[in-house]
Image 1 (tube, helix red, strand yellow):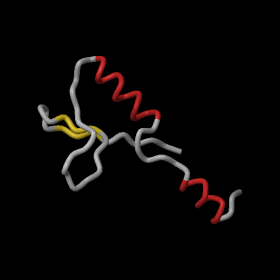
Image 2 (image 1 turned 135 degrees about the horizontal axis):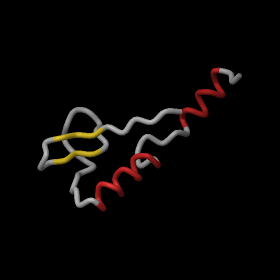
Image 3 (image 1 turned 90 degrees about the horizontal axis):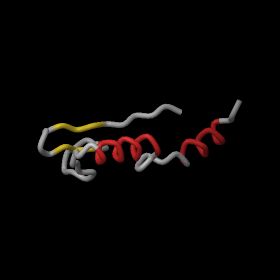
Image 4 (image 1 turned 60 degrees about the horizontal axis):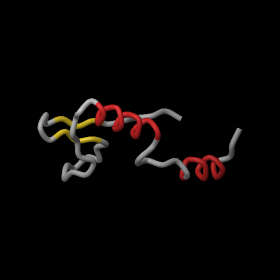
Length: 63
């Protein structure tokens, strides 16, 4: 069992951008010929943005 301070330290080390599931998905989509954007001007922080499809993708992982 971790204390509150230890858990906070562990959680602060977790990357929220360019993590393994997100990179794997981006690589697979790129190899299939899909073009996407990573940065956009939407209010939400999306992981992938398909301009031509007008679609956003959120990659959620679990701990």
